[in-house]
Image (cartoon, rainbow, N blue to C red; front, side):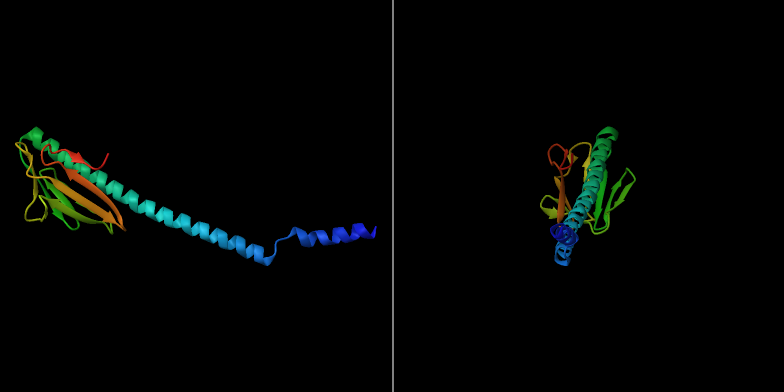
Length: 153
């Protein structure tokens, strides 16, 4: 009978967690949570860029289509804050922390020299736009020969 009393008295002490085990579990939980939070922040930046790139590609396609349909030239005017497509009344601003690099024929596109979609030649030259946020980059291109837009599905 003494043996039963001894084993039942030692059971509650063995059934619980020590302070060290509890701290180790909390540390592991904190590490996993920080990895998940960092992953979600990166995917948010990528999603913001994907939306901006899709919007730009759609606007470029609309400008190209309208130039061919109407027979009149349309101009894309780039700025650090966004872009305007004259003739379609499209004016877009980039989301916060998004930077854009507009290149045509190897030089940076400036607001004084807009990119023109004309019905005769489709484009004056190729266009490449790189938009980036927090190290995530998306690229959209307008083919110099065909005028087709590439880079976003």
